[in-house]
Image 1 (cartoon, one colour):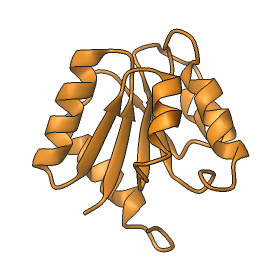
Image 2 (cartoon, one colour):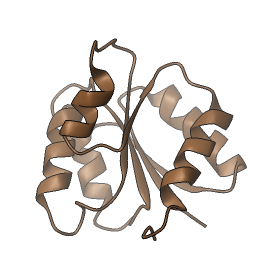
Image 3 (tube, one colour):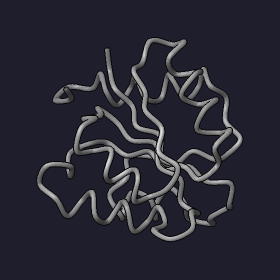
Image 4 (cartoon, one colour):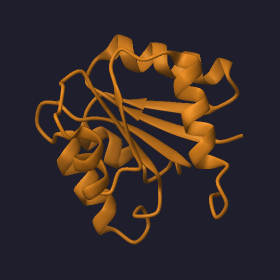
Length: 125
């Protein structure tokens, strides 16, 4: 079973995303801010991270930077999601080390399919 860490400051979104992904066969854990997400990595070793960009304190770009700076976490695929429109969002996300960007709101089935594509890819865990 693949493990997904969901980091977002919107409690309802974290809960609903975790439930939707569990229903689709993933093991999930939610974190309500960047710091909690980084702390969760110490015990929950995800195969993929869903990361919100706009969070108070440590925002998603900062969390992504820290993930990509550490040897233990740099190879974990990260999908960033955001409600904010970025004119070059996909390119910006990839330049910073994310594998993809998903706009909120999103369809749970489509998200699960996208995640499976990254965790089942050759060379993934």
